Length: 449
Image 1 (cartoon, helix red, strand yellow):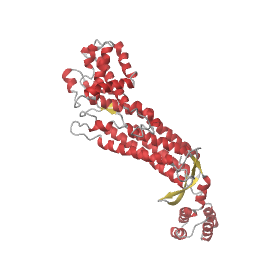
Image 2: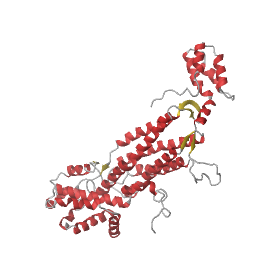
Image 3: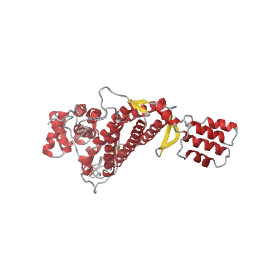
Image 4: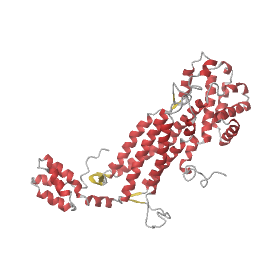
């Protein structure tokens, strides 16, 4: 059965495929095989550059032929590797045999036993996977974060001076501005991205149990630590110096934890926007032909924010599991990391879907300034904080208790009742004039962005 949107088991490869198909170049099985081939080829070239005595005669003008095996790698080539794997029942060994066959075709058979020389599978996997993660982060994920921040920044500045009723504990509270509340998320995202940038991508490269046993026994006079450090630096990564058969995964766990925190910020924004829509502070653009409910024709649901929230839930559950599981392995290694790490692309995909859904929802918003201002005018009690603070400044007796008595009753506080209250105060006309200027629309504090 040919894979399609209708028969894919995962919605990432079905319903949402178009949104995340760029990830196939980094996290698909074919991509992983390609990155493994890349690491094997670059390792072989690095051995030639030492040179190992047996590789001193390797023609350097053939390096480009070797690198073409990676550059021109296709899904057909990946299938060739998978066909070999059916026999070997070992994915990395299949890559080695595939490259050896290509060496035969290139007339380089005399050198092929130095493919994968002294290595264990995890030297390849724990270099290929973090390198793929690094490229996917730089090419796909980070630009999307920057696009989201830019989107939110523009909205925050556009709505900067629009006063809005705040809610703490779900109750009306000291007014704010719509722009400032959006900019809170800009600041939070920027702070977490700074942390994310400081998490390095690292690789493990040191033989079967991390000690270069095979390398050292064959060539004891070569500084293999220096060689491996330089080799991994060539991929723009750091090499973990003392490892077991596998990398520690501590930095990868930190990366997942960081992505999870960023996702939680996006989730928080999803829920706030959903609530603002329920308050009718925003209406939503209507697309011709779209249906909000199968039963209620009037409905325009905030589905994009809900979709974003749902995808973040899935992504974070997987990030949580990976971050807690991957750094834990029995003794020098068990195989559970291999099973888990193959799924890295899945929470990344759900994260991308979530961000795109959020931005789609933001683009549908229509500001309902009339409703925002009406809510402010319906909640004159929120200026009680301002009035009692000014009265405190003036040494007025029991100002908090005086305002509490006015506002914490079942009677609605209106512009008129607040004005009458101010007029009844035993303060100077100058202070009364100052108090009358405080309204729910003007009592918004300092804008610091």
